[in-house]
Image (cartoon, rainbow, N blue to C red; front, side):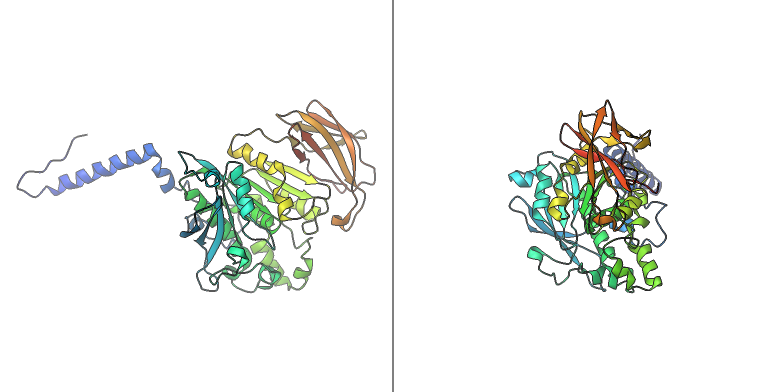
Length: 430
C-alpha cells in the first residue's frame, strides 16, 4: 500500500482524502475478518427463521436475537439474580426476573479466560425461576439462566411491570386478544431473549448453548427449538404438541369456537414449529404422564428431522425436580456442547419371527435391556405396563415379542454409566 500525504500549509486534496478513507476502510475490514468481528455483522449471532415456519409465526426472530437491556439485582453468593427487558404487554414495558450461575459464581472466583457452554432453563406450569436448577448446571460446568415466565420476581411476588401470568386463562382464554398480549408469545420471546442475553456475556461461548424445559417448559422448548437455530441441543421434558388432539387441556379447547381453536393451534401448538428444529433433540417423558400422553408425544417427535434420542420411562413421576434429575439430560448436552461420550441410540425396533430386534449405536458398554408393553387401549395415560428382560448381543437388543394383544411397546437399554435411553414407541396400529 502507498500512503496519503498532505502538503504543508495547504488544504489536502479531496481526492487524496477519499483515497485515504478507502484505504482505512479496507484495512479495518481486513482486521475484522482476521479477528472474527464480521461474523456477528453478517448474522452469525442472528436467528435466521427456517423457511418451513408457518406464515402465522408471530415472533420477530431477528429482533429477539439482540441481547436485551438488563440490570443485576444481586451479584453475590453462588447464584446471582437479574432483570432483563421483555416485550411490551398490553402496551406497557415488561421486565423478566432470572437467576444466573456459572462455575465461577459458585466458587466466588472471577472467570479466568474461561469460555463456558451455556444452558437456558425453562420452567413449567406453577413454576418460577429456580435457583437450584441454575446451580445444578453451574456444578456441571455450565453458565445457566433460569427465568420466570409468570410475571413474577423474587419469592414469586408479582412484578408491577411483569408480563402475563401462567394460568389457563392466559394460556387459552385470551385467544381473542392480539398475539402479543398472550402468554405463549411472551414465554417463548422471554426464553429466546434469555438466550440472547446469556450469549452476550463475556464468560460464555456463544457457539455452545442448549435449552431444556419441563412440562409447560417442555412445550415451550419444542417451540423454541424450531425458532432459535442458534441452540446446539434441546431437551424437552414431558411437554409436546398436538394438545388439541389429546392432553389434559381438552376441556379448554371444548370451550372454544372452531375459529378460536384453529387460531390457537396455528399460533401456539408446538406441532407448528418443532419440525423446523435443526439441533439434536432429546425427548423425555413417562408412559403415564397425566398432561402429555404418548399419542400426542409420538406425533410430536415424529416431526423432527434432526438427530433425536429418547428416554421414555414406565410411570415416570411428573414434576420440576423429577424433570431435571435424569442424568441423561446432562450427558446429552455434554455430548453436543463439550464433546462428551454420546448416549447410546436405539434404532427403530423390528418385529420378526416372534422376536424383537433393534440395533444400538453406542460408544459405551451396554449392561442391560428391557422390552416394555401394554395391552390396554384407552385412556392412554392410565394403562398398565409390563416389562420383560431382553438380551444384548454385540450392538443389538433381542427380546421375545410382546403379546399379540400388545397395543404399544418400546425398548430400553442401559450402559455402564447407568444411563438409560429408549427406542421410539411402536403402536399396534402401525
